[in-house]
Image 1: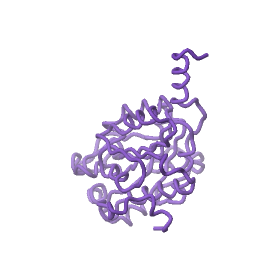
Image 2 (image 1 turned 180 degrees about the horizontal axis):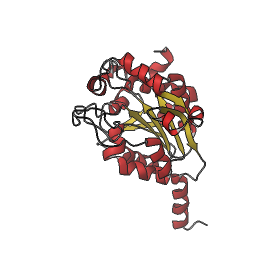
Image 3 (image 1 turned 135 degrees about the horizontal axis):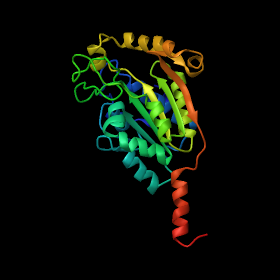
Image 4 (image 1 turned 30 degrees about the horizontal axis):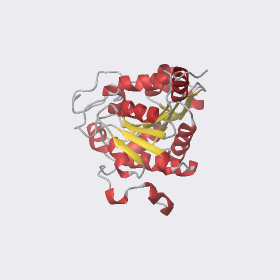
Length: 272
């Protein structure tokens, strides 16, 4: 770790408890590097998480942090942003935390276009609670609760976010780290609801159940499956089957929620 990045960590909480080969540390490191590159005021950054392996990340990070209940990170983050709109709010969440129990909060945070940057540690599994399948587990993949293969179709989280109203939507991976840092920077600079879906790895539960227990094998699989948005636009639906499309999908400028709400308060108080 570069010496200048150490100030962003609670070093007395390290080393972390994530399994060997877990990709969560890569995403956490990318978040810190993006914050440092943008020279954000450390005391004005607030990082919120729910429950899960990914939700341990804020405990290691030296910012204003809040570790909340399962699926409720975006609800808590909304309250913080409404109370103090000057804060830069990040939500670090897992695929189950965000898209299962937290799915309704996710949809409405996107719909409101509140200025929150949501980064999903998407390892396609519930890692902390025993390896159950999540809404992001691919069809036919194995999990402790799908010992004969998952029959549910998985969400495309980026399409869901854009349909719900998110004004910045992108996907990165733990293999493509320089790109991931840049995408986090773009998400942080965007005023409005930002969703960054990060394809992550869990060797302990997803990998072991799906004959990819080696982190190297899982990383190589991400590399082999990934195509850029530009390349994907030239590919047929058949060619895109099984691929991970990475890059920026959507960006638009729409009035931000806390700013619009401030106008309502002003009117209520007798302003013009």
